[in-house]
Length: 569
Image 1 (cartoon, one colour):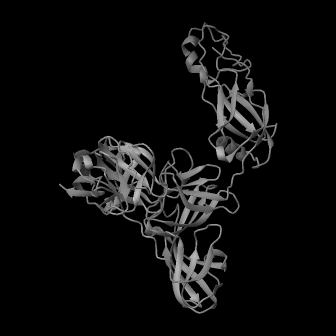
Image 2: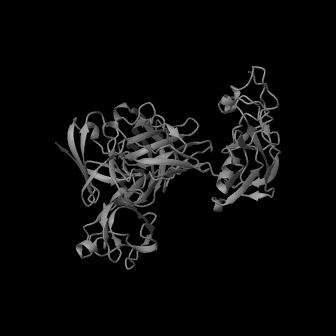
Image 3: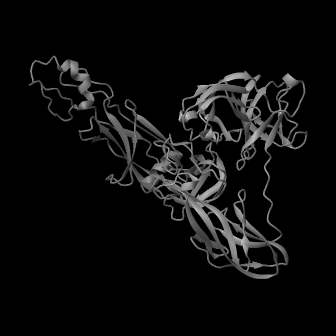
């Protein structure tokens, strides 16, 4: 039996569906053909569209077309498959569709909608200029089989004005994809972002471009410093040393690197080692000044971590670094050059190298000594959360800071609250945070401790509180498991032995390079890690697990006190 092309011929797409019917054909001369689906007519608004950055989630455009999913065959004895045709929306800046962006639509669906941000991102990919009205050409491409030529609908044209996308800024997001004050800079708006980041050991993060594209770690081999931008990409991570990292994210090559600045030394009119404040992202040097101009050269040592070295300290590549240029517009490279600063008064002064703005690094001298680093409280106390158990408002329950830069606190509490609760900065009644809006599971807080936050029903909950955003979120604990031991990422359930305390009998038999994570409710978005016996919300797996000798242990985690232990059996 043979198949001949007649307008559109079946390919392997329909061969399986036809197999049984085809075996009934009398001889190889029988021919089965299809004329394909119906012609597609594309419709939608043709009014001018002006995209507004202030309404990113608003509906901007709806397209719909006539159904072409049902096929008609020349032999009625053969059942044609439903929705055999794949439809793709093509958009272009020219009527000849020289360059297109495509949206493939699920089979059987004959419409698509775009929000303001989605449409704006697509327009940017085909060269539309922000703030400029230009015609947009749209058509539907229909394909029956990979070896067949596509057919096209009518072309719809409308004028669209995109909003301006600032591709010079790369936004540094935390491990939960939340906003921070950190940014990187792309001087040429070419997807290569650079700048200095004050990062904690093993700090997790993502980068978001101005067009909304989110970059993290690629999800294939999970090699450090490889980038991915699909929905399955995980967080990127810095090496296990806190400090000042010159960070380059190259989205063109899907790679990033971090250069740890180990030390900076002054020579010239001032001599000595500078000290680094990670919170402010500044290097400082205190000296006894007289009014005048000081000329200094800043050089230092560094260690490069990239896709070739991974995060292994022994593999890091030693480098020299230095600053040059002018005090108001510093440059960065392998060696430093002389830079002059003015000092206006006598007495103790501080020379400050400010790296917090990736667009402009500066050197200045001001009266007074170096700024004292801001101390972040280790605990946030939760009072009133268990008065149904203890009969009083005490300070035995607290959350532990798990991200100092984001002022994020977390932990678990066995809740039984009669009147609601508040968060306190100290273990006594004083400054703290009370209720502003929301419900028992999430909401916002303010500094009015006279208004209690509503408590959930009695039970065990994970708490997440951000003092930067003044928000709170709770998760009811349904199960607790561990994963990562022996590099096995199967979630294995732990046994509850008392409120918020869980344990498991474990066997250490192989390397555990990424440490053990504690997973709540089998949800990989709710996890605890940490190190040195301290259990911290949204931290990487326990450090030191790889060095744990092979053997039998009882792993115990106290989600309330924030501790974990391995006890040999």
